[in-house]
Image (cartoon, rainbow, N blue to C red):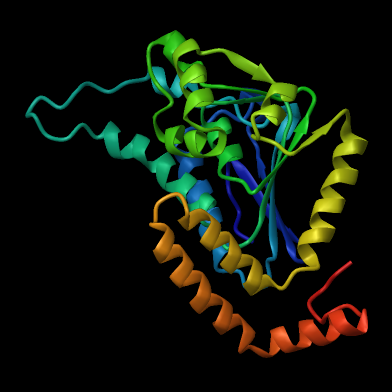
Length: 267
């Protein structure tokens, strides 16, 4: 897969593994890193052999939000009243988050250490979040005079408006146990061995499922946040019939009845 300066992306069989790779900065985000993430998510989306994505941070932290050194280096505001060039630059991370959020493949985030700001947003755009007991989440940006702009809709959808309002107006950082209680993560692990066992179990579950069926049900779940119920149900009925008419459905039903594994099942 592609080479990048701030992240690594590799394929391990049917599983893509993306590592945020600025450990000296707790994997804090720069504009270059945001561009790399969007490109990587596009590569994964188009990879027909990829059936799951695992995201992790190097060095014991997931992602400490935006890189404050980069953010402090502000060019002057345009003098002619034109659009501030920083607006599309910061909007870029929202594009990367949208690309992650709608990936057809299941996405698993392993969160250790800091996951504030942008890191919080990436976790909320993942389907399954595995929490190390060191994980910490929050939106503390107002403490230093700005906001976590591009993560807001994804955080609100993940935890609900009430908890999101609490975190937004207090700037407090929550621990892994509270993150699990709020539904940010579904697995809480005490150490690396526990994380590895949990990840294997999650991947085993995913790789037993038919890829197009998984992509379709994920798309329908996401559509519930923005589409009217009737439209979702219409789409779901059409999608179901389309899937049932494929040979994979016949193969899957026969395998289930015979108590054997269908051809797409791995592990």
